[in-house]
Length: 255
Image (cartoon, rainbow, N blue to C red; front, top):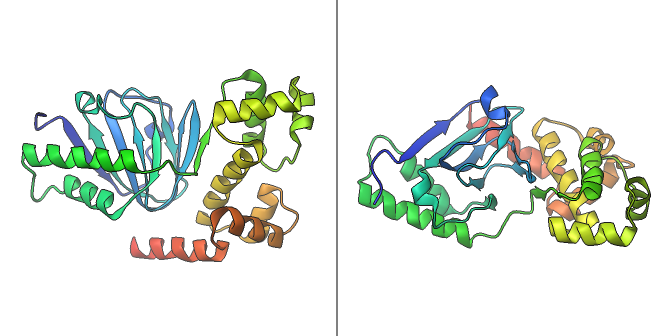
Protein backbone atom coordinates (compact mmCIF):
# COMPACT_ATOMS: atom_id res chain seq x y z
CA UNK A 1 0.00 0.00 0.00
CA UNK A 2 1.04 3.61 -0.48
CA UNK A 3 1.75 6.13 2.22
CA UNK A 4 -0.62 9.08 2.42
CA UNK A 5 1.98 11.46 1.02
CA UNK A 6 2.95 9.43 -2.04
CA UNK A 7 0.26 10.95 -4.25
CA UNK A 8 0.47 14.69 -4.82
CA UNK A 9 -2.51 16.30 -6.50
CA UNK A 10 -2.52 19.75 -8.06
CA UNK A 11 -5.24 21.68 -9.84
CA UNK A 12 -4.01 24.36 -12.22
CA UNK A 13 -6.36 27.11 -13.43
CA UNK A 14 -3.96 29.44 -15.19
CA UNK A 15 -1.34 29.67 -17.92
CA UNK A 16 1.49 27.17 -17.92
CA UNK A 17 4.23 28.54 -15.67
CA UNK A 18 7.57 29.54 -17.18
CA UNK A 19 9.35 26.60 -15.55
CA UNK A 20 6.93 24.18 -17.24
CA UNK A 21 7.93 25.63 -20.61
CA UNK A 22 11.52 24.48 -20.06
CA UNK A 23 12.53 20.81 -20.50
CA UNK A 24 12.47 19.18 -17.09
CA UNK A 25 11.86 15.87 -15.36
CA UNK A 26 10.98 14.60 -11.89
CA UNK A 27 10.83 11.23 -10.13
CA UNK A 28 7.03 11.29 -9.99
CA UNK A 29 4.69 9.98 -12.65
CA UNK A 30 2.34 12.63 -14.00
CA UNK A 31 -1.19 12.38 -15.40
CA UNK A 32 -2.51 15.60 -16.95
CA UNK A 33 -6.16 16.05 -17.92
CA UNK A 34 -7.23 19.11 -19.93
CA UNK A 35 -10.63 20.50 -18.98
CA UNK A 36 -10.50 23.79 -20.91
CA UNK A 37 -8.06 25.35 -23.34
CA UNK A 38 -5.46 23.90 -25.70
CA UNK A 39 -2.02 22.73 -24.61
CA UNK A 40 1.08 21.52 -26.47
CA UNK A 41 3.24 18.86 -24.82
CA UNK A 42 6.68 17.67 -25.79
CA UNK A 43 9.38 15.11 -25.12
CA UNK A 44 12.56 14.69 -27.18
CA UNK A 45 10.81 11.78 -28.95
CA UNK A 46 7.39 13.23 -29.70
CA UNK A 47 5.08 16.23 -29.73
CA UNK A 48 1.41 16.16 -28.90
CA UNK A 49 -1.58 18.49 -28.74
CA UNK A 50 -4.17 18.31 -26.00
CA UNK A 51 -7.64 19.74 -26.37
CA UNK A 52 -10.44 19.63 -23.78
CA UNK A 53 -11.31 16.07 -22.86
CA UNK A 54 -7.82 14.73 -23.52
CA UNK A 55 -5.15 13.54 -21.10
CA UNK A 56 -1.55 12.36 -21.15
CA UNK A 57 0.42 9.96 -18.97
CA UNK A 58 4.07 10.95 -18.46
CA UNK A 59 6.18 8.26 -16.72
CA UNK A 60 8.65 9.13 -13.94
CA UNK A 61 11.99 10.68 -14.98
CA UNK A 62 10.73 11.52 -18.49
CA UNK A 63 12.08 14.80 -19.88
CA UNK A 64 9.09 16.86 -20.97
CA UNK A 65 7.77 20.40 -21.31
CA UNK A 66 4.52 22.15 -22.16
CA UNK A 67 3.34 25.24 -24.02
CA UNK A 68 0.04 27.06 -23.63
CA UNK A 69 -0.80 30.29 -25.46
CA UNK A 70 -4.02 31.03 -23.60
CA UNK A 71 -5.65 29.98 -20.35
CA UNK A 72 -5.79 26.25 -19.67
CA UNK A 73 -7.72 24.45 -16.94
CA UNK A 74 -5.96 21.24 -15.92
CA UNK A 75 -6.23 18.51 -13.34
CA UNK A 76 -2.76 17.11 -12.65
CA UNK A 77 -1.95 14.00 -10.64
CA UNK A 78 1.64 13.44 -9.47
CA UNK A 79 2.13 9.80 -8.55
CA UNK A 80 4.95 8.16 -6.57
CA UNK A 81 7.44 6.15 -8.69
CA UNK A 82 6.94 2.91 -6.77
CA UNK A 83 3.26 3.01 -7.71
CA UNK A 84 4.14 3.45 -11.40
CA UNK A 85 6.41 0.40 -11.73
CA UNK A 86 3.72 -1.91 -13.07
CA UNK A 87 2.35 0.74 -15.46
CA UNK A 88 3.51 1.64 -18.95
CA UNK A 89 6.90 3.34 -19.23
CA UNK A 90 5.84 5.18 -22.41
CA UNK A 91 4.19 8.56 -22.78
CA UNK A 92 0.55 7.94 -23.69
CA UNK A 93 -1.94 10.50 -25.01
CA UNK A 94 -5.61 9.55 -24.83
CA UNK A 95 -9.13 10.83 -25.23
CA UNK A 96 -10.60 10.58 -21.76
CA UNK A 97 -13.81 8.84 -20.75
CA UNK A 98 -16.45 9.83 -18.24
CA UNK A 99 -14.96 7.33 -15.79
CA UNK A 100 -11.40 8.68 -16.13
CA UNK A 101 -12.61 12.25 -15.64
CA UNK A 102 -14.71 11.26 -12.64
CA UNK A 103 -11.80 9.37 -11.04
CA UNK A 104 -9.52 12.39 -11.47
CA UNK A 105 -12.13 14.71 -9.98
CA UNK A 106 -12.58 12.47 -6.94
CA UNK A 107 -8.84 12.03 -6.43
CA UNK A 108 -8.39 15.80 -6.65
CA UNK A 109 -11.15 16.49 -4.14
CA UNK A 110 -9.72 18.02 -0.94
CA UNK A 111 -12.90 18.68 1.04
CA UNK A 112 -13.55 14.96 1.59
CA UNK A 113 -10.17 13.16 1.71
CA UNK A 114 -10.09 9.51 0.68
CA UNK A 115 -8.81 6.71 2.85
CA UNK A 116 -5.50 5.23 1.77
CA UNK A 117 -7.17 1.97 0.73
CA UNK A 118 -9.89 3.73 -1.25
CA UNK A 119 -7.43 6.05 -2.96
CA UNK A 120 -5.17 3.17 -3.97
CA UNK A 121 -8.05 1.19 -5.45
CA UNK A 122 -9.14 4.24 -7.44
CA UNK A 123 -5.60 4.75 -8.75
CA UNK A 124 -5.43 1.11 -9.85
CA UNK A 125 -8.74 1.53 -11.66
CA UNK A 126 -7.51 4.76 -13.28
CA UNK A 127 -4.37 3.02 -14.55
CA UNK A 128 -6.43 0.15 -15.94
CA UNK A 129 -8.67 2.60 -17.80
CA UNK A 130 -5.67 4.47 -19.24
CA UNK A 131 -4.09 1.22 -20.43
CA UNK A 132 -7.26 0.15 -22.22
CA UNK A 133 -7.60 3.44 -24.09
CA UNK A 134 -6.09 3.61 -27.62
CA UNK A 135 -3.43 6.23 -28.31
CA UNK A 136 -4.74 9.52 -29.67
CA UNK A 137 -4.00 10.49 -33.27
CA UNK A 138 -2.79 13.91 -32.08
CA UNK A 139 0.54 12.43 -31.03
CA UNK A 140 3.38 13.27 -33.40
CA UNK A 141 6.27 10.76 -33.09
CA UNK A 142 9.73 12.17 -33.83
CA UNK A 143 12.40 10.05 -35.55
CA UNK A 144 16.01 9.44 -34.53
CA UNK A 145 17.53 8.73 -37.96
CA UNK A 146 19.50 11.85 -38.88
CA UNK A 147 18.28 11.93 -42.48
CA UNK A 148 14.65 11.59 -41.53
CA UNK A 149 15.10 14.04 -38.65
CA UNK A 150 16.20 16.67 -41.17
CA UNK A 151 12.89 16.18 -42.95
CA UNK A 152 10.68 16.34 -39.87
CA UNK A 153 12.61 19.21 -38.27
CA UNK A 154 12.24 21.20 -41.48
CA UNK A 155 8.49 20.51 -41.63
CA UNK A 156 7.99 21.46 -37.99
CA UNK A 157 9.85 24.70 -38.70
CA UNK A 158 7.88 25.34 -41.92
CA UNK A 159 4.79 23.12 -42.25
CA UNK A 160 3.70 24.81 -45.50
CA UNK A 161 6.23 22.77 -47.50
CA UNK A 162 4.71 20.28 -49.93
CA UNK A 163 7.76 18.38 -51.17
CA UNK A 164 7.47 14.76 -52.25
CA UNK A 165 9.53 12.08 -50.53
CA UNK A 166 11.69 11.90 -53.64
CA UNK A 167 12.41 15.63 -53.35
CA UNK A 168 13.17 15.29 -49.64
CA UNK A 169 15.44 12.36 -50.43
CA UNK A 170 17.45 14.50 -52.84
CA UNK A 171 17.86 17.11 -50.09
CA UNK A 172 18.93 14.76 -47.30
CA UNK A 173 20.84 12.12 -49.23
CA UNK A 174 18.44 9.18 -49.19
CA UNK A 175 16.19 7.45 -51.68
CA UNK A 176 12.42 7.87 -51.66
CA UNK A 177 12.08 4.20 -50.75
CA UNK A 178 14.48 4.57 -47.81
CA UNK A 179 12.63 7.57 -46.40
CA UNK A 180 9.27 5.81 -46.78
CA UNK A 181 10.63 2.80 -44.89
CA UNK A 182 12.13 5.00 -42.17
CA UNK A 183 8.88 6.90 -41.67
CA UNK A 184 7.01 3.65 -41.07
CA UNK A 185 9.76 2.18 -38.88
CA UNK A 186 10.51 5.21 -36.70
CA UNK A 187 7.13 6.94 -36.45
CA UNK A 188 4.67 4.17 -37.26
CA UNK A 189 3.12 6.47 -39.88
CA UNK A 190 3.33 7.08 -43.58
CA UNK A 191 4.86 10.38 -44.65
CA UNK A 192 1.50 11.92 -45.63
CA UNK A 193 -0.15 10.77 -42.40
CA UNK A 194 2.70 12.20 -40.32
CA UNK A 195 2.47 15.55 -42.11
CA UNK A 196 -1.31 15.62 -41.69
CA UNK A 197 -0.90 15.10 -37.95
CA UNK A 198 1.55 17.98 -37.81
CA UNK A 199 -0.83 20.24 -39.72
CA UNK A 200 -3.76 19.18 -37.55
CA UNK A 201 -2.01 20.09 -34.30
CA UNK A 202 -1.17 23.53 -35.70
CA UNK A 203 -4.72 23.97 -36.99
CA UNK A 204 -6.17 23.22 -33.55
CA UNK A 205 -3.87 25.77 -31.94
CA UNK A 206 -4.83 28.33 -34.57
CA UNK A 207 -8.52 27.70 -34.01
CA UNK A 208 -8.01 28.09 -30.27
CA UNK A 209 -6.37 31.46 -30.94
CA UNK A 210 -9.25 32.62 -33.13
CA UNK A 211 -7.58 32.32 -36.54
CA UNK A 212 -9.89 32.42 -39.58
CA UNK A 213 -9.93 29.78 -42.30
CA UNK A 214 -8.11 32.20 -44.58
CA UNK A 215 -5.38 32.77 -41.99
CA UNK A 216 -5.05 29.05 -41.36
CA UNK A 217 -4.82 28.28 -45.07
CA UNK A 218 -1.83 30.62 -45.33
CA UNK A 219 -0.31 29.31 -42.11
CA UNK A 220 -0.54 25.69 -43.28
CA UNK A 221 0.20 26.10 -46.98
CA UNK A 222 -3.24 25.49 -48.50
CA UNK A 223 -4.26 27.23 -51.72
CA UNK A 224 -7.47 28.70 -50.29
CA UNK A 225 -9.70 28.79 -47.24
CA UNK A 226 -12.03 26.31 -48.96
CA UNK A 227 -9.13 23.93 -49.52
CA UNK A 228 -8.21 24.14 -45.85
CA UNK A 229 -11.83 23.58 -44.81
CA UNK A 230 -12.19 20.45 -46.97
CA UNK A 231 -8.90 19.06 -45.63
CA UNK A 232 -9.84 19.77 -42.01
CA UNK A 233 -13.21 18.07 -42.33
CA UNK A 234 -11.50 15.01 -43.81
CA UNK A 235 -8.76 14.60 -41.18
CA UNK A 236 -10.60 15.94 -38.11
CA UNK A 237 -14.09 14.67 -38.96
CA UNK A 238 -15.49 18.07 -38.01
CA UNK A 239 -15.88 21.54 -39.50
CA UNK A 240 -13.60 24.37 -38.35
CA UNK A 241 -16.70 26.39 -37.44
CA UNK A 242 -17.86 23.62 -35.11
CA UNK A 243 -14.47 23.58 -33.37
CA UNK A 244 -14.54 27.37 -32.92
CA UNK A 245 -18.00 27.17 -31.40
CA UNK A 246 -16.94 24.36 -29.09
CA UNK A 247 -13.82 26.21 -27.91
CA UNK A 248 -15.80 29.41 -27.38
CA UNK A 249 -18.32 27.52 -25.24
CA UNK A 250 -15.41 26.16 -23.21
CA UNK A 251 -14.06 29.68 -22.67
CA UNK A 252 -17.48 30.99 -21.69
CA UNK A 253 -17.95 28.33 -19.02
CA UNK A 254 -14.53 29.15 -17.53
CA UNK A 255 -15.34 32.84 -16.98
